[in-house]
Image (cartoon, rainbow, N blue to C red; front, top):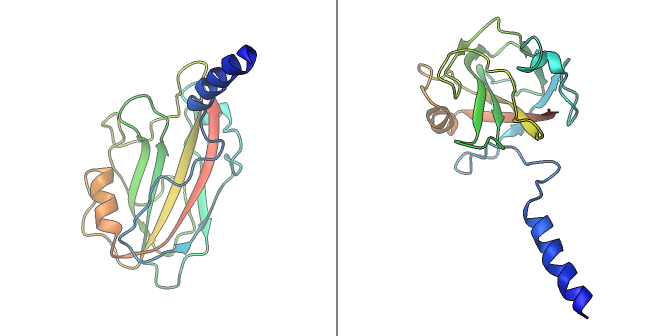
Length: 179
């Protein structure tokens, strides 16, 4: 009996510190009408797979190409967020924030739209850089809008608020990287 009482608290402590193997999409816009589903892919990030080191702060800091399909015919603009919900402070950490990608595009490689501020405050891609000994899940989120946003919102929260009305589809690709 004493052995069972010891095992139960240990299992409870272990369970409290575990992270879900497949976190849900970060952006949930409950006030928006149910949007359609985009399929998000990348030549560098297999779905739920390990992100190659070249796309991180430990490598050459290359921005992955992001592609999508399944956008409704009335799409006028796309927005992209790359986020880390497991960042130790101020989650989610914004690695990339892009607005104003034309509605006829099906991929992004830095060739269109306006790059907004990442969590570090610069208008650029902040390479993935989890702490040593940790593996983080990175969300590559694409949003299709039925009308262009008027100007680029200055923050993630501003972007989410601005998208509630014109959001017609969204998609999320999750990749992992650890050191």
